[in-house]
Amino acid sequence: MSIEEYREFISTKFASAPAKVAIAGAKVSPLAKHHQRAAVDFALERGRSALFLDTGLGKSFCQLEWARIAAEETGKPSLILTPLAVAAQMVREGVKFGIEAHQVRDQSEVVGSGVYVANYERLPKLDPSAFGAVALDESSILKAFQGTTRKRLQTAFENTPFRLALTATPAPNDHMELGQHAEFLGVMNSNEMLARWFISDQTKMGAYRLKGHAVRPFWEWVASWARAAVLPSDLHGDDTGYILPDVDLHTHEVEVDLMQGADDGMLFRIPDQSATAIHKEKALTLEERCRRVADLADHGKPVTIWCERNDESARIAQMIPDAREVRGDMTADRKEELLLGFADGDFRVIVSKPKLAGFGVNWQHCAHVIFSSITHSYEQFYQALRRSHRFGQSECVRCDVVFSTTERDIWNNLVRKRGDHDAMKEHMRRAMTGAQTESELHRSHGTLNVRIPEFIKEEENAG
Image (cartoon, rainbow, N blue to C red; front, side, top):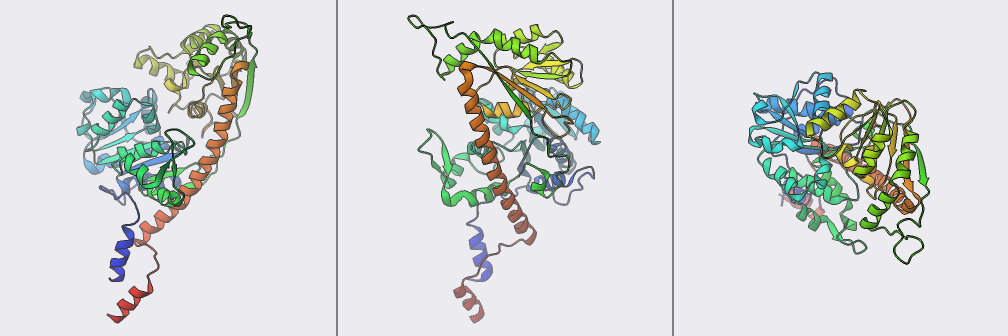
């Protein structure tokens, strides 16, 4: 066995995502910052990849520039799919950077090559085969979609040469989210990923954890098809302007009457943490919480109010004269009009649910966020807060969280999840930074730096 044959043998032991299509040496816009250029270059060179860039690092610019270059190279249109109301914002971002992008509602509006943007809801009215490249904006919301929708996206673009998925750093302890991304990109089936690097977590039903010896190989594999960054320096960029002040967090516990709604024969009600009990509790404490929210929002500056119930949202909008409510039963066009209207300052207060408007929109003009109720989902809380607490925010963001005394355990659980998330996110950042650096060295040198066993050296010298 020769040295080259041995190197080739060793390289087969490293799982990586080969570039099935690639664009090398593309001229990325000079407006790109260093970390953005590094991300776009990598995505173009891989052909099918993911960019896990935290909120405010410029994901919109990265995907617009990637889509522009892909359209020029393939001669076919590029498609960017976004959450509701983000499509129009994406077009505006394009104007800012000199990239012409067109928002479309159906295939008849796609004329010639170029960059086209549509909401996910418009997918059934589009012809996926007409596009040479597709980018999924806020791709982590795929895990919130029903399985049929996720499969429809995967099937629709399984033959699309260039694919890109973009989201803020995915939940580090939700490895299935990484598996879903890898599957969409055609890198590896999520079941194969689990079998190769994971073991069932006996402490949590249905959960998996990385095998002890597999931590480094797993992140090296992820680094072969993804780039992750919490700050520009993770991609060797400049952090100036990206380190935001801490959020000014305030909690407000609303006292409630435990005798109200007590079961027959009981003097007090004793709520548990079941979905039914939480739903009942929110109904019983609605008026008190809404009144506290209205008082907190009474100051004349922009406010974002996040709710969990329709009656809660309606009551708050009724209490605040200059508020507009975004509801699930509205048409997509009406929702988009209101979400963009708030961004443009057409009205002072917006009231909505995190699952409706908590992803993708940019509301840096607003430095006051109020949660009128809470759930156990830390991801929704984090994403909703980051609509305002992001790059470009010039003020310290005040965050008021209103909950009843009977929901204190839910808040404590969120605080615990926040600590777990921050710790795991830092672990992921370090692992990915190391893996990314090593991956860059492998790409630049083209060979693996391995120690050649003596018996092979002797055989080579003897030959």
